[in-house]
Picture 1 (cartoon, rainbow, N blue to C red):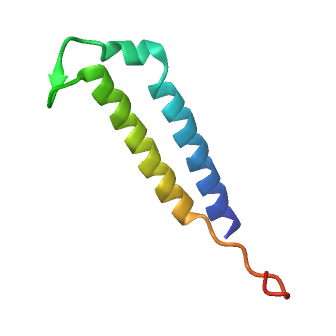
Picture 2 (tube, helix red, strand yellow):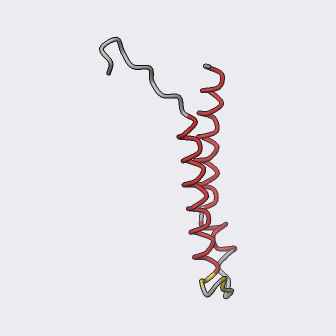
Picture 3 (cartoon, helix red, strand yellow):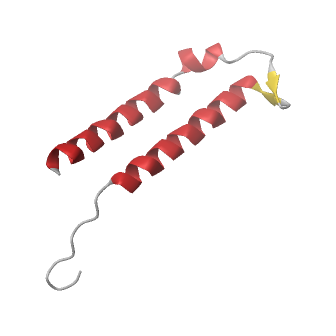
Length: 75
């Protein structure tokens, strides 16, 4: 179980670093074009898409975290 938890922690770190990289201005400015998707400017669409994917990735990883076993007192 310990190696699985280490992989999970490593995945969380990678998701955090990848999310931070995707939000850095040099990469965000690539999407600062006068293009719209469904009437939404491309940069806004990009930022919300990245935000949504980070939330979904976090939810998947958080769901995979093992629950702590209750103590003898039931807590």
